[in-house]
Image (cartoon, rainbow, N blue to C red):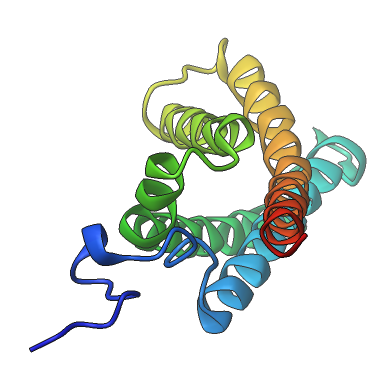
Length: 168
């Protein structure tokens, strides 16, 4: 039995571009999950720093904070699931093909540190260190949200240049 060149089950027979570009469902789910993650994180930052109601007992927690955290946690789980789904088809094949490595490693690194700081906020940070953990987490989150479109643009432009070289 001859397997097609683009077989996902036999990477040695795969064409160089096979598996690097995400399937449409995967791409759209990842984009929407990252958007939900970013918006919910930014909503928390705004609610926490700018929308805290002042009562007769002092500043209080904004009603948007717990809801934004619940949405953020759900979106984080979706993004982590999707990141795991990228390992074999996208990340490993791009690494083997030496494609878009710098921005790809930056995205992996940022996501890893975001996971660690998110975990730290829930399980490690004390009241004294929580503000530092929080600021680090949301600054890196903004970097991740800005870095993903950059990673996509760099990958697509490199793909376009390769196509032009092959046909030209």
